Image 1 (cartoon, rainbow, N blue to C red):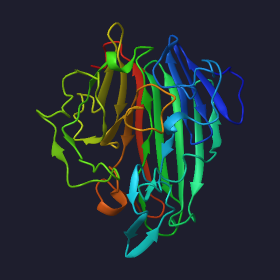
Image 2 (image 1 turned 45 degrees about the vertical axis):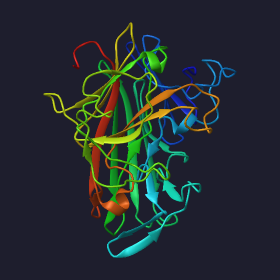
Image 3 (image 1 turned 90 degrees about the vertical axis):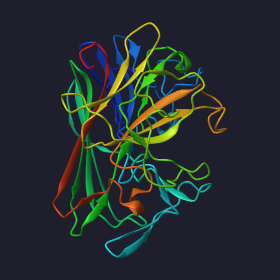
Image 4 (image 1 turned 180 degrees about the vertical axis):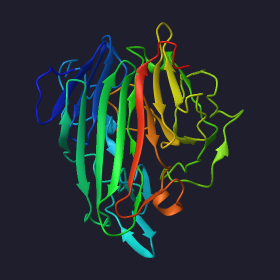
Length: 324
């Protein structure tokens, strides 16, 4: 992790045994630890020459970055909203998709900062294929119950705007190799994707009794996923929780409120993608408001009238038994 000196690029947060680093680029969660134990992939993960205390120039696999005003992929970069067709920049040329929104590589402004929290903000609108004026905020806050991230999107323009968002959050269970961990998901359905473009091939299907059923903890040894899950079953407090558990210590818990009804679960694996040859296997559990290609399908798409604000929260904690 980096030192505590504030800079234009990174901010170190502390509360009790928790420590986090948040970057201005993409309002990105660069690292999260509890009592020195890693709960997320750090931005230098998979680069041994960097060392634990140095920071890579770019996050691996967009780790920790905000994906807005749409998450995941938009087919051919094209969508129609309110009777008008828009052509986004193609940012995934190999698949002819517009991928992961507009803000993950942009610098956000700092609106507020304390020892345990930071709020970033950014305005968008007027980019290729996106005429909709939105103001986004991301507040990262540490407390006794770990990290809470609260996002808002406000329509600051004069026309109705579509909106979706996600976060490319990679989780760790300390230093345990992924294949020695188990995964438990509270999901009831998945959205099948094609193998060529990672776009939906139909509607959601139940996971019960299939290879995608993680309602009981299952080993991740040899498992590869790049799958949107939904029908998240909340606990009694209304919060849905997903668990990555190592063999000999507490689980890492990623939670979402009802405003994030999807999670995309992705295993970064050099065996499946030659773009990642310099790192081992890693797991992303990505809170999302909608699945891939929502700008076209309308599934989970949020519509903001001028002046409207959407708010949603998610977080990560070290499991002490009180969350289950």
